[in-house]
Amino acid sequence: MNLTSLRLILKMGKGARPCAPTSFILLARIAIASVLTSTVVSIISINIATAANPQDVKKLLDTKQCMGCDLREADFKGANLRDANLLRANLRGANLSKADLSNANLYGADLNNANIRKANLTNTLLRFVDLSEASLAGANLQSANLTFAKLINTNFSRSNLIGANFTNAQLLNTDFTGTNLTQVRGLNLAQVQEIR
Image 1 (cartoon, rainbow, N blue to C red):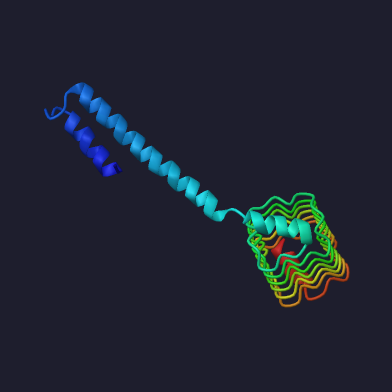
Image 2 (cartoon, one colour):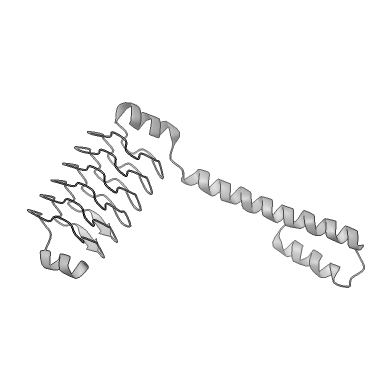
């Protein structure tokens, strides 16, 4: 039963004779329950469709090798992912806060809207990654390679970017407030002033 059917039943109850009051109330309750049930089923389907693949999560934690894996919205808070190979992995919306991703390979990974606050990304390969809407506040990105990275609305506030490489990175509304930009390559410091 859909919303149109529910409206029709409600109209019938306003002075029309086809239903007795008790029957009308019963039909209305059935119609509302039907609409609510289909809405809940749709919401559950959407959440299942966007969640990480459990086998991929286990594979990454066991082997630190997960190229092209589906890790959307996975929780890796504080995880030891040092030297992990996450080439072209889908980490969209993942929680990597306080994780150790030092020396990891994240080439071409999708980190859109990921929480990477206070993570260790020292010497991490982040070439061609999408970090749009991601937060790396307080993260350590010393000597990280962010060449050709997509950095739209990315938050690097209070991060350590000493020696990081931003050559050909796409920046728009990127927040560098309070960051250490010593020896940063490929980043026009005048551009950084405009972005802040």
